[in-house]
Each structure stands twice: as C-alpha cells, then as structure tokens.
Amino acid sequence: MKIELAENYGFCFGVKRAIKIAEENKNAATYGPLIHNSKEIARLDEDFEVGLVEDFTTFKSGEKAIVRTHGIVKEELATLKENGVEVVDATCPYVTKPQKICQEMSEAGYDVLIFGDEKHPEIKGVKSYATNGATVVTSVKDLYEIKLKEKIALVAQTTRKVEEYITIVDYLIPRYKEVRVFNTICNATFENQEAVQKVAKRADIMIIIGGKNSSNTKELYSIAKKNCFESYHIEDETELDSSWFESKSFCGISAGASTPDWIIQNVLNAIQKCV
Image (cartoon, rainbow, N blue to C red; front, side, top):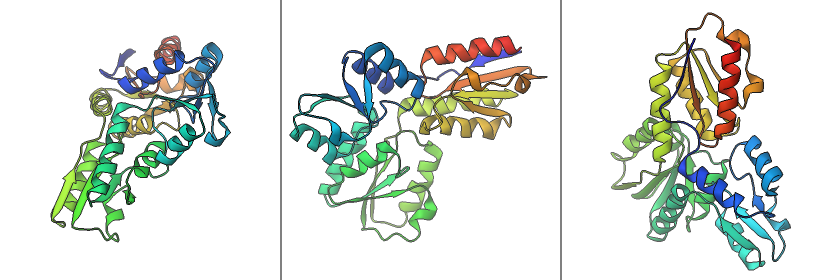
C-alpha cells in the first residue's frame, strides 16, 4: 500500500513559536491548553515542568503565566498584569491580528461581525477586543435575523474554510452600504486544507491526525471525508485499526497545526506495520 503525506501538514508557525516559548520558560504554567493537543501538553509538563492552569484567578503575584496560542480575553489579560503575574505572551500573531482589527473597527463605529465558533477560546478572546461588542456567526443563516448598522467590519476565525467565509461576504455586500472584509484566515490553514483535498481525491483511505478538540484538525477531517469516504480522525497511533487498511492501495495522511512530528511519525510507523 502506498502511503503519502499531504504536501503541507502539522505544526504551523504560531504553534512552533508557542512551543519554543514554553520550552524556554520552565517552571511556568499556561493559562488554558497552550495548543489543542493533550499529548504535547503532557510532554511539556514532563520535560519542561510547564503546567496547565484552567482558572486565571489562581495565578499569584510573581508567578509566570504563559498565554496560549489562541489568546485570552482582554479583561483577563489585564487582571493578570494588575495582580503582579508575569505574563509571557505566546498568542499566535495570526490571532493577534483580528484582535487589533476588532478593537480599531469597533472604536471607529463599525458593527463588528466575527465568522467562527463563539465557544472557541480564540473567538472568545477576539470578541473581547471589540470595545462596543461584536456578533459571532457560523453561517449565512445566522445573519437572517440580525440587525446591523450600515457600516460592518468582518473578520474570521483563523482556522475557518475560505469558501465558507466567502459565502458570508457575498451575503453582506449587496445588503449594506459599507462592508470592510479582513482576511484573517491563517495562510497555513489554507495551505493545509488545500493539500489535504489534493491527496484525499486520490486516496482510498485518509488518516487525519490531531486533537479531537482541535478546530483546524476537524476542518481537515471534514475536507478529507468529503473527498474520500473512508477518512478517519485519530489523536495517535493507539486509535488505528488494522482492518481499515484491508484491500487499500493508497493511504493519504495529514495532521492538524497542533500535531507534533513525533506523533505523526508514530502513526506512520504503526500504519506500516498494519500493512
């Protein structure tokens, strides 16, 4: 059986940067999971004594808090600093961008619209920067009952599909006098999505590796499934089933932006043993 990795996969720039920051700050703790990969978080704890704190109010003066790649709520960041906590910011620069846009556009009198998942930590943080509030939508249907001003500023969650973002834009432009659209979808996300689509079209089985709560990994799986019916989303090699590969001739593989190389290699090794 042929095994082929997608042209682009795995750790993106923002995740690599965050991991490096965490490794350079031993005996610290991240506020919330640094990235959406429990195996890598466990490695940081074991090898670098970088812990995980879910409640920001438990940090004490003098302690070191690492801000996760997805960023945090503006008010929480301010509270940490006011309480004398040493803040090490590992927020991905691609996430910092929509935060700044939301603040600037909101202060300039625009209705801020965010395309993404309101429950996702990235969007919670981005929304908090809109001084006069923001509305989060997941599809065009969400816009039907919403009343907006004539001036709208639109941003997207960094891991969303470009095609879905365009449908939001196409709906808004004919209906409002001014729509300012900011392309805040990460380049790495777009490249990974494009690459998984290419390999999935040729494969008869696809393996997508990444955290089950990773938004960008779930998007990769969705694209793979659409192009290759037998697609599977796993976190590591222990979830593989040898029966999946029976009578298969081409296995395509991709991985989410928060999936480390060592997990990908373990999966590759395990698949080779299956066949």
